[in-house]
Length: 122
Image 1 (tube, rainbow, N blue to C red):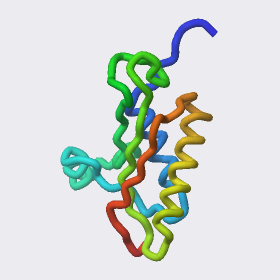
Image 2: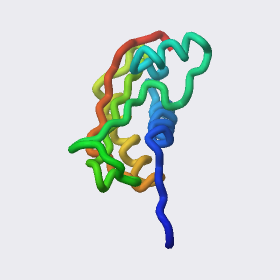
Image 3: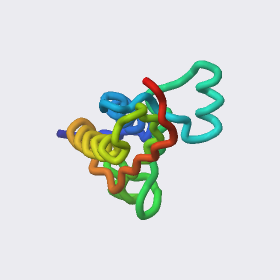
């Protein structure tokens, strides 16, 4: 194949957010920062809300997979259903997200961290 494929961090965050929503026990995503919180209040929540993409080993202009600037990391801020096993759901999120990102984007995440920031009656 000729040419290159560039997957933006926003696209990667959307893929991860959509995948996390599919996991049983996940009620939703929590704002990861003030800007997301304001957008959610204004009714502009997006599939990438609650997902923060970072780089391990620096940050420079790498393409898909971050070959030139370190590998991608993902932090997910989730709200879980009351009564579920938080460690079990968190592990399910990590496994599924890492599998989907590898299968659909061809990217291996250096780290996937789940932050359970709330519990809700679903």
